[in-house]
Image (cartoon, rainbow, N blue to C red):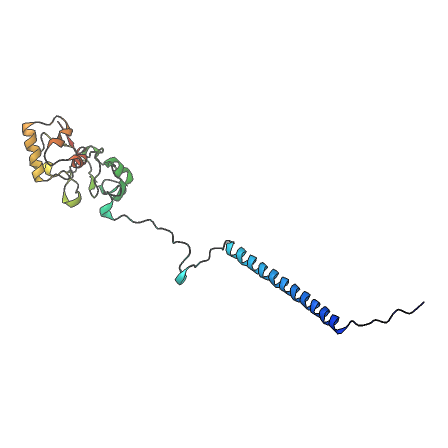
Length: 225
């Protein structure tokens, strides 16, 4: 067998071209790898931005809490009980738990006694109008049998009668003791009945100075005999 021909190096021009081709391929692979890395980093940044973050204890400028503080129930000032749909009354006398009770507006004396635990032995319920509607700020006093019945004090020092007042026979002083009725309005009621004796409580609306709001306060406190 004949010996293989000796390996002949390519001319310098071919060597330079081959080196250039290899170097270009290496640069191309490097560029592709860098582009792939940049794409991966961009996709990771987008994913991190879109992923939900667990709520931390602080957030925002100055370390403010991220979650709002729980809303505490707002106390209703005593003078605004009735405007808020409630009335506060003082229950005293022959009751098991005398003191201040708060009830829904429109409640009656019977409801106040129930809130105070009921009456004790010897209480004279016949001396009290259990069906009377309560007025914010008044006092409900339950007397014992044989005790003098004192008119409970209402807001502003006005006395609330223990029972319904007869519009046709009450004195000016008795009418003046009704909530919202002063001496002038009491005189108008007397003048009205002198000319037109009351046949129903609704006729109070015909007395000058008594509107619908005042009538709602009085209708359960008066009667016509």
